[in-house]
Amino acid sequence: MFRRAQILVLVTVGVLVLTLLNLPPSVAARLKLACGAIFLPLFGLARGGASFMDHASYAPLPRSALIAEVERLREENDRLKLESIHASEALAENTRLRAQLGAPPRGAWNRRLARVVAREPSAWWRSVTIDYGTRDGAAVSQPVVTSEGLVGRISAVGYSHSQVALVGDADCGVAALVAETRDNGFIKGGQSTLDAGLVEWTSMVHSPRILAGQTIVTSGLGGVFPKNIPVGQVLDTRTERSGVTTTARVRLAANLDRLEEVFVLRLEPLPADSEATTPRPRR
Image (cartoon, rainbow, N blue to C red):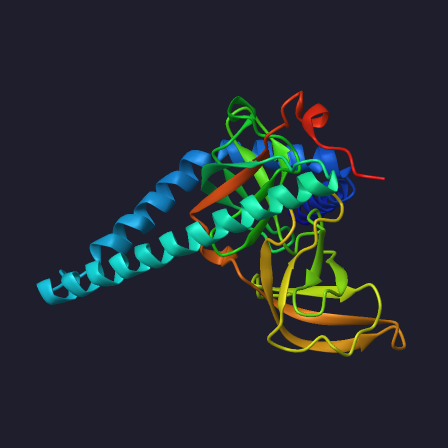
């Protein structure tokens, strides 16, 4: 009797696993989001406890160290101010050139801060849950970034929380290019690697110019991710498909293992009269 019960349990578990693995992607995403919402209080308690222990271990810093840190932050602030002025001038120049060429202006990206409240416990999916839902303007495919680089995109939304498919997940393909050579390619996701900070980028065509140390950024193709968001750095390359394509291992710029706060990018619509006020190209 006991052995029969064990066999019945194993068969039931096997059927459930096969059913979950064969669910449509949209249904699976919603199911994962719903299950994650049930355990959010436990995730929050665990995260709060870990944060408390981490901060409790800080030793009081001497006054000299605090003064040195203030000076470093002041210098960093001055440097960022100069970079902001330079970027503003470049943006103004770009806007003038686009107007002269008759190109429509680009919509601005509005950044919304969100906090990571849960992390996918399984290695099958690379995803996190953030406290940002439809009540805050969340929508599927909105890009998610940190100050270091690309994190992923929103794959499922709820009222108060959303699920983010991280770079390298099967639900987060990324069109990207090599900044130095301008070779286009993509990160298709779904790769089996124990290191969440590594992904594989594949070029459209083989290029021997792609070398270790070069930078991968989003290409803007596909319409999901804006152009020139840092993705990562090339570690090494190999030739695939009898020399047709090049595959590179990429170390991600954003540390996906230590995500706490992220930014969700929302595209602000252009003014209704922007098209009418844009100069037409000269003939």
